[in-house]
Length: 367
Image 1 (spheres, rainbow, N blue to C red):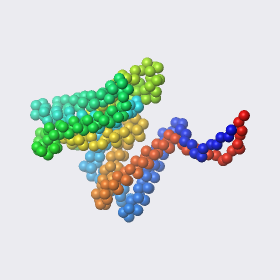
Image 2: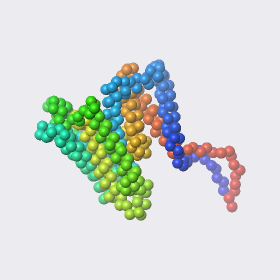
Image 3: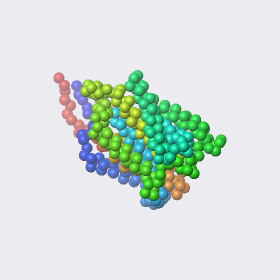
Image 4: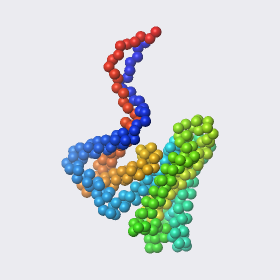
């Protein structure tokens, strides 16, 4: 019997030093920029350096743009942090969009019905609590079905997004202003009841403070708490978790209450701290983009800060070059896609290596 080694094999690497992993990611970004530069020059004959400068200006060119970039990065970070415990447990929560919308609906309802009845500081507390509960309930439902009947959480949470979108459409129609517009105008624009107050002269500073507190808290929770340990064990092996006395069903429900509640918090921030209205676009696709944030960061919430800013920078920069150089949206999306492809691809080379076939060996006969 003779055996022939395949021409190429994929093998898993042992633990890669952190500096080496980040070096690989940096190389991936540089290669992505080089490929994008060739594409830009081939399509529009523009100096790529000028285009990249325009991308930077689109995100940080003015003080206002910088703060909008910070605001959007904080929103994305909040959702990424919310997904971290569920994904670390290998409970694939694809329903963050719906959980954000539920939090946003509750916040908008509080602003509309309680805005002229209670002071703003109390209204914000009610909105915060209500939004977290709304998102938690939307996370609890698929967790309960998974725990009781073993349903597929990926499909269940995904389908609940569509239910949440329809619920949002219903409330937008109920609250539409002006009548017949099928939109909700800026809520409490004259009184600003339920709006985040300015801190240190910045309208989005409270957004930053809330999200950073959540980011630090989640890091401590996952790394140092007993519940974080249980999440890690279940993520590695459910059978091992059962063997050591952990009850997966209980952890599923508890973790999804937290994950959904934090997504509801993101809905609260979106309504009270950014748009001051509600629509089916309130989540803005962040529930899906945040999956990339959580996965690339390997559930380290501090690393998520960097990745959130990178993704928002790419989005803002791509929009800027599309408008400044009269490029259509497809070109800007191609550039963003290429950079993300290289960044995601770098994770393969961090975790795996390619082993090529060595020189032909003499055939060995088996007994």
